Image (cartoon, rainbow, N blue to C red):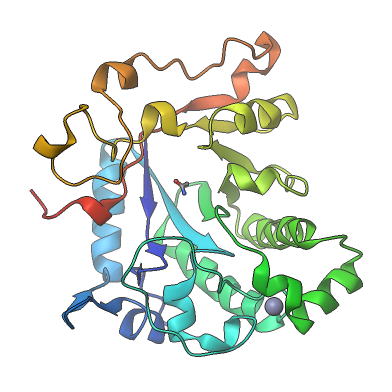
Length: 284
Ligand code: ACM
Ligand code: ZN
C-alpha cells in the first residue's frame, strides 16, 4: 500500500529544503484571523522516521509537492517566482488562488529542481506527485515572461503551457529516477511521457489516461474523499468541507471502471482515499 503525503499547499509549506531555508522560516507560517500564528514544518529526521516506519510495513510513501498552482506558501517565501513578483502573505483562507509559479522565468525551474532534488533524497520510493490541479491561468495570460515562453516553445495557449511545465518537471524527475504523478488536470494540453494520473474529478480522466497506456490511481470525489460528511444530518457532525459520503458508498467502490476495456485494466493501480486536514481540529 501507499501513503500519499501532501506536504505543501497554499496555506503552508511543511518540507525542509536545506538550500531554501525561507520555505520553512516564512512559508510554513500564516496569520489566522485574530492574529494567531499558525503552522510549522517537519524536520528531515521526522520525515525519515515516517518513511522508515512505512518501509518496515511495506508501505511506499509518495510525497506531493504542488505546482504550478497551490503555491502561495512557496511564493510568500520567494515572491520572485510568481509572474508579478509581488510579495503576498501565506493565506489563511481556503480556496484557489490566482498567483501561481511563473512558467516563463528560469528561476522557477531552478527552484523546483532544487526542491525535487531534496525530495528524492528524503523519499526513496519510485513516485513523486507534483499536484497539477486547480491552476488558474489569469497571471500566465498577461505575464510577459509566460507569453515569451509560449511563443518560444510554440504553445498555443496557457493549457499547453501547463502541459509543457509538467513535461519539463517530468524530465527532471526522470533524471532522478522518479516517475511523475499528477491530478487529472495534467491531461489538459497532453500528458507527459510515463506520467501517472490520479483521477479525482470523476473517473473519466483516469479512463482516458489508461486507454493511452498510462498508469492511473482512481480517487473520485464521489467515493473516496474521506473529508466529506458521513450523514445527511450535518448539524450533528464536526465541521467538514461539504459533500455526503457514507462509509458503505466508500466500500462499494470498484476502481476498475465497468466501461474500461479489459486490456487497459492493468493500468489501474488501485484506489486511494483522500483526506485533507484543514477541517481536522486535533491530532486524536
Ligand atoms: C483535489 O482535491 N484538489 C485534488
Ligand atoms: Zn509568468
